[in-house]
Every structure is written in C-alpha cells, then in structure tokens.
Figure (cartoon, rainbow, N blue to C red):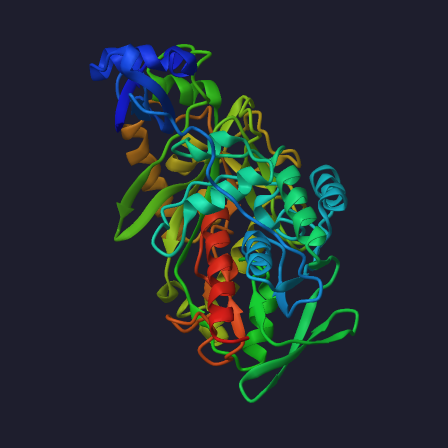
Length: 519
C-alpha cells in the first residue's frame, strides 16, 4: 500500500530525513514497523507564524517493497548523419529544443551569437569591473542565455503545455542537485548552473549535434512563405528546412529584422520598474518573525503584489542572499537584474519591483514605431537610466523611503551592485505611470511587511528586461509563424514563455510540432 501524507516539521527536523519514519508514525498514526520506506515529493516553508514549519509531502510505502530510485530515463543516440534542425539561440529554449531533437532522431545545429561559458565569463567580469559592454557577450547573450549567470530559478506557473517535471529531471540528469525535484521553489544557483549548461553542451556534441558560437544571424532568405536560407554576420549562407527561433527577450535586432522583412509581429504587455535591495537580515526578521534566522532555514524570500490604478505592481525575480548585476546589452544603457548563488549567502536581498506596461502607454510618444513601440519605450527608459546614472554604468539609485516621499537621497547605503550607484531622483524622472504606481505600491507593501519600507533599503534603476515587449505570432495548433510556415518562434523572445523552465518546455514543444509537420 502507498499513501501520500503531509508532515509539519521544525526546520531542524526537516533536514533529518533519516528520522522521517518516526515523524510519519507520529503524525499519520502508521506503526513504524509497517513503514517499509518513504520518498520525499515536495518541501515548502510555512512562515505565517513565529513557529516556522517545513511542510514535507511524503510518499509512504506500507508493508510493500519501496520504489525509491529515480525512474526517469533518457537516451541520446548518435544523430550526426540524420536530418538537420537549425536552432537560433543557445538559451533554455534552444538547448532543450536541441536535446529533444536528438531524442527524436534529428541533428540539431545551434547558431549562438555569443560565446561559450568560459569566454563569456570574462566579458561579464569586464562589464562589472570596467563598465565595458560587449554587445554579443554579456549577462543576456551567450551560452545558456540570460539565466546562466543570473540565478537559475526554476519555479514556473506555466504547467499547461508540457512537462515541467521532465525539464527538472533533465537538469538533474545534467548535474543539477536533486533537491530541484522536491523544493517548492527550485533554484540551481548562478555558481552551479554554468556547469549544468556545459554538460548539456557535451551531450549535444557527443550525439553529433553542432553548436556554432560567435555566429550571429543577420538575415533570412524567404521564398513562398518559407525560409530558404539564413545569413550570418560573417557572410555565410546556410540552407535550412526549418528554423526554431529562440533568441531571447533581449535580441532586439531580431525584432527589427523581422519587421524589416514584413514578418508579422504583435505588441505584448510586459513590466518595468526598479530593483530594490534590503539587508538580508532585515527580510529574515520580517518573514521569520525573529531576531536571528535559524541555521536550518534558508535566506528568506518574499512575494508582493497589488493593483494600483488598474495596473499590477509586483515583485519579480526575488533573490534572497543575492546580488544585483548589470544586464545592459549595448553601450549607453543601464539595466539591472538580480541573481543568487546556490548557497544564497550574500548579506543582501534584492527583487525587481515592476509595473505592468500596456500598448496604450506608448500611443503618443512612440506610436510611429508601430508594433515595436513598446520596445522603443523600453530602450528609452534604459537610456534615461544611463543619463541619470552619470553617463556611465553606475546605476541611478535612491533610498527607498526617500523615493516614496519624493526626496533626493543625500547619501546611499552599501550595495551589492559592483559597478556602483549614483544618487538620483528616480521619483522625478521615471515616467509617472511607473514611478507614481511604484511609490503607492511600496506604501502598501510596507504595511504587508512591517519594516520593509525603510531607508535601509535602496532602489536602483532600471529593471526593464522582465520579458519581451514583442510577440512573434504563431499558429496556435502547429506553433509555426502565422505567415512563415517553417519558422517556429520559441521561448521568451517569441513571447510564449517566462523563465528557464517554461522556455525549455516551449523549445521541446516546437521541435515536436515541427517534426509532426514533416520538416
């Protein structure tokens, strides 16, 4: 007999899984002698009271042989001489599309504008130390995509179109900690995800696939509503049967190229705002109702949301024990993002705090850009941040309470943002429909989390790359572009995913749909 039960444990008890048999007996009334085994399915934290509990969902085997091993299996045969699938972009959508293609007996060829992880790491270090942006190799572009060096969060609400569990299993297969299979909000960590990505690369190459780094797509040759070939920056022309376009939400040149070619695009609502940083100890004390966090508890996180004047204002990509990083992809921009190492042991906690942006917000100033109006507005805000950061990669910043009260900060607290911060009146130069809503939102969040609204915290501008402001429309059933029949837009850049897992799921589905249609 098998039974799923929920245990309520102290943080210390929860880490002692060798004692679970005792707790199962105590809380479920099952005699210990009848418990032949148990398997942890999910863990989450209940911090609604001072007596913080860990909720552990356990599959219990009663008087029968337990099945505790991982049943997930995958096989990657050699496909070097098989039909080819061309994939643009080596982010989650592209990499998992390649893995799925191999499983289905196709040879993936990935074209990636950026560099492999080791070389990419040098460009990121240069960006942080000397404020030099390499437009092709940064926090957004390169092997693994935007997630590789910015956290590796795996939580997703998108569970309707594909198997989230399968993606997590594949990440574990390639080296991620098995805890991602049971944690309610799984997280790999920016220091460990690169190793997982390199293992995925190795799988693709050993199976006969190809990954062409420093290979930027610059044009399509289209005939009879199909892509006949693609052109790269080096002048190489590659004939294709079909293309999976998985270029990520920051590849603006792709949107401009598609628009120039007359390929249909759509505006898509997204969100922009700031990144707010608190001392982690302060967030711990608020969330865990304590003076000092227990050694058995992780750095505390939070999730905040409100409606301000009919728009959502909410926390995004919350990074406990993390760092704020520069995510610009071009000179003369300031873009901030957040990440956490696997241990989440930084003394800072940061989160995006963003406002919903809709197409009507750009009807006047950017209407001339048509379907790219929101994209232009996004660029405009990033350039404003650069100007107000002192014409360099330092981020414009303001103490949180000062921002809410419309006061320029005379000094700024310590920050994790390595390029540095410059005091700036964000309340003044942020567009009113963003800045005013953020001010009102922070007031509400300060009531939800007493102590959150404080001048110990600092806001940095701007958080602008939450998702794509453009959607590349595709057939709802077959996933190809509504106009170009062998173009399969995938992942965040296409406007159909948000984050590592949902992008990976979408990449896999695009391969399956492509094969079903005979490409």
